Amino acid sequence: MSADLEVVKEIVKELVKVQQKPVHIAKLSQLYRFKVEHSIKTEHKKGMLDFIKTHMEGTFVLTGEHNDTFVALGNKLSGAKRWIHQTVAEHGPILLSMIGRLYREQTKQDFKEVFNIGLTKFLEQHFKQEFTFEVLKGSELLVDCVEKSAGVLPKEIQKRNAKREAERSE
Image 1 (cartoon, helix red, strand yellow):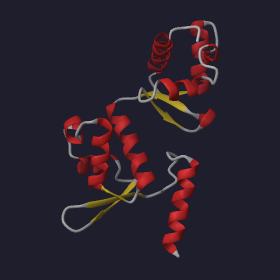
Image 2 (image 1 turned 30 degrees about the vertical axis):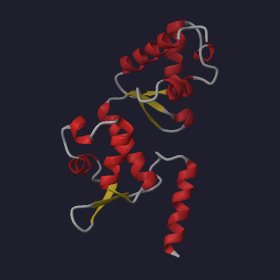
Image 3 (image 1 turned 180 degrees about the vertical axis):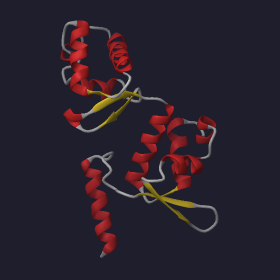
């Protein structure tokens, strides 16, 4: 790598911040080339998208796939929403308490301490359309995605979920 990794990260972060709305990955690559007068491939052979996924995980929110990806600055809220959506889509149906436990294991913090709101209320506020909620015995809640192929899962997991669904219906 010809430039310092931290310098490249800061340049990319600044370019995304200036856009103020999600920027297409190809445009971000062009902006980088205009700013530093050479391609990102000089710094990272696999290109801008791979650079962001490899070196800047959690800094940005990525939407779309492959060459049709948009990049926006991430924050705690958007990161948590994306993580919850991916977790429920991958593991659902899943107990609400398990979502909280997985969040605590990954971040080493309790959800309520980070967002000052309980996980139940957070899901109801942010995922009313995307998730189904089923009340079980006691105060436990079962959470699942309305649509399993919501574009956040890798193809292998989508296939696995489809296979599970087919086995359930037999």
